Every structure is written in C-alpha cells, then in structure tokens.
Image (tube, rainbow, N blue to C red):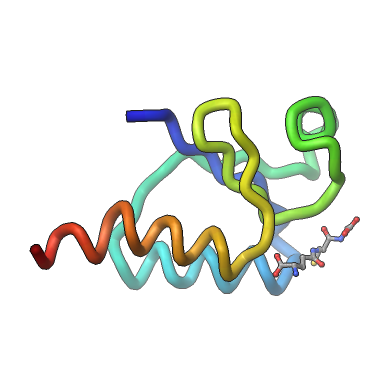
Length: 82
Ligand SMILES: N[C@@H](CCC(=O)N[C@@H](CS)C(=O)NCC(=O)O)C(=O)O
C-alpha cells in the first residue's frame, strides 16, 4: 500500500477538520507542516498548488479536505466494518 503523508498548516481550518477526523477515527499517518520551507517546496513540486490540506498517496497529491476525509474513511474506517 502507498505511503500516506498529510501536508498541512496548524492555522488552517480545513486542515484542522481533517486532523480532527483522523483523531476521532484513530488514524495515524505522517504529517508535514508547510510552515517548513522544504515541505512547502515539496508540496509545490509534487502537487503544483500551494494549498493545504493535501494528502500524498505515494507521489499522487489529493487536495480538498472533503475528498481527503472520504479517502481516509474508505481506506481505514469503512473497510474495518466489512
Ligand atoms: N476547499 C479547500 C480549501 C483549502 C484552503 O483554502 N486552504 C487554504 C489554507 S486555510 C490555502 O491553502 N490557501 C492557499 C491557496 O489556496 O493557495 C479544502 O476544503 O481543502
């Protein structure tokens, strides 16, 4: 399975929405704050947009908090129930 990394900013409400969902669901993945210039550069290099939150699924960027939550829900929550 691909490595998951969430690029986020602590001050971003959309990021906090994703982080709250992860906490509630017990989902632990790598986190990288784009307040670090190197992380921001990597987000731009891979995702082409300086927008957070962005979930890296391997090397594939997924933007939009609702889409990220839907992906994490499908990968970690819904599958546990089947
Ligand atoms: N619709 C997006 C909104 C994300 C968003 O607006 N993020 C802000 C930070 S709170 C941002 O990265 N703005 C910079 C930009 O869009 O270039 C979502 O739900 O993820």
